[in-house]
Amino acid sequence: MSIPTLLHHRWAVPALAELDRSGGSRFVPLVHALGASREGLRRTLDSLIDAGLVMRNPGYGHPLRPEYVLTKRGRKVAPHCARLMDALRQAGLEDVGLRKWSVAVLLALGRERRFAELRTILGATPRALTLALKELVRVGLVERRVHDGFPPSTSYRVTRGGQGLRRCGAALAAVL
Image 1 (cartoon, one colour):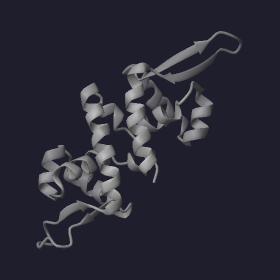
Image 2 (cartoon, rainbow, N blue to C red):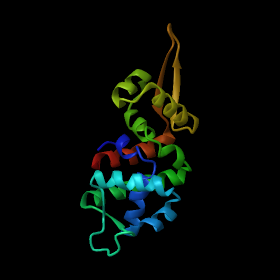
Image 3 (tube, one colour):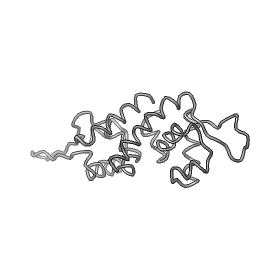
Image 4 (cartoon, helix red, strand yellow):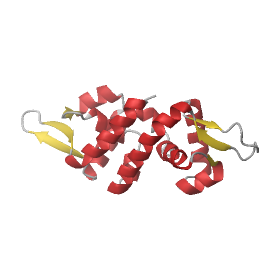
């Protein structure tokens, strides 16, 4: 599993972090704890079950009110999700940081790169990458540099403020 695959669902990282914190949760309390929509969280949990990170608690009684717990693999990944969530909350960047390509872009920017290099590394569409880069530049996690010359070229690099999130993302990517 990759970072973009995990972050395909907006609630995946927060759900893993909450399940790590609580040790398991029923569906409705999880909806309330995260502030997620029922359908969005349902799709996210199905995806996390398919990925082998979450399972329904086999020892919990009621089939219409299942409890979700972390699998063995999920217990390795979830603490890193919790650290990423803490870093995003402290920076006030939950909305931006939990988008599909944000953390992946930060990881790809281990050094200064041009747009085409990023696109090749990530496999993102030009539109998705453009939107992610614009948002990361807007919040100050990435710096956009325009170089003189003909034709002018543009490169991107992680700012000092983005380094902490990059480290959290790298730790998460290492256990995926």
